[in-house]
Length: 457
Image 1 (tube, rainbow, N blue to C red):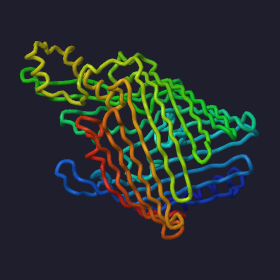
Image 2: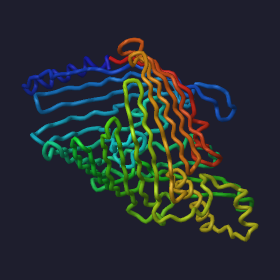
Image 3: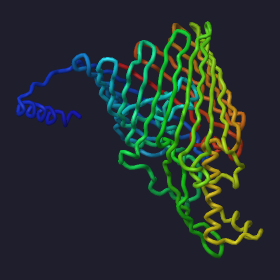
Image 4: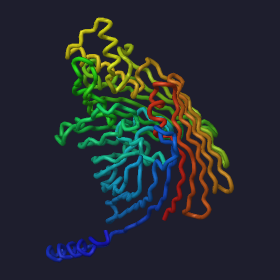
């Protein structure tokens, strides 16, 4: 940046002079942070401690205004180090957008992060903001990914607001594929994502009502789900021994429609929040192994806060519509033993029959990943926070238990602020589950303890 700044400044000056324009310095505010972070974990293969992630990061937050009706914001991150045994050296424009106000209406254009939903732990309505759950950071907000969008808002009085968001470019969430152990013959091809045609964009509407008794929001989404599915391409095996040679898969985006609502109600010293959503693919889920079943998901939570303690407890559930039992075991592989057993039972290994078997297994894995193997899912969670020494020490203990699958998420953490702007953090992030559950597959790779030092300015 320092090397390029003289040439960049000169080009701006020359352009300004050539057009007989005057460069006006806008109101500019600069903030950000510098952070050093390390994750320590066991290697899944040898069970030895290693640095799962270690990096230094600089975040710059720029805010500028021009007059009384235009403002801009940019969140730029620089990161260098290592993550999952691979070097990391990146610059990321996490957000960069411009706001324009015209009376009761406003417009926002650029790369945005637009989370939906009032739920603290689960957000069934969140379809606009993709996520990267592989990011090694104690801050959950760091998992959110920005996407290019045009957003318009209009105030419909003092207590109502309507917001419309259009995403012409597809930004997928990051699937937990790398942590899942797979044989060497499994290959992931180039993903099948929508292009840049205008009819391939996604849009969302949300209507907000704010009163002293209740905060209520209604949502509608029509577009591509930011979680892509895993699709089957081809399979090659030895015709005599049925030894797999190559199994080619790819990520594929698909369109959905979602209608949802949420509300927040104060109940004395408590706050009740609830959120629910209906979701369905535009195509019939029977037509492809990567398409999920339609579903209804819902969550409710109670929170009570005091000077030194905060407790949040809640429930999350799902009901799978058009449910049928899976026809195969979930897997992203095609084992030789499986086919030999089927041949002994009378299976005729034609190309079409083998493709059908593999599609069923991949479809079951998509259902495992999307939590659609069962007709109903039930989850309970509790998050406790304690604030000590005039809020210089914060202890957080979130626990999530998936009752249906037997999986657990445990992420205790403690932070200490020895001075203004300095924060020391340590904790553990753990995913645990019974054999052949999703957390049993990804937990041994992702589970780790961490330490972080952050200076904000």
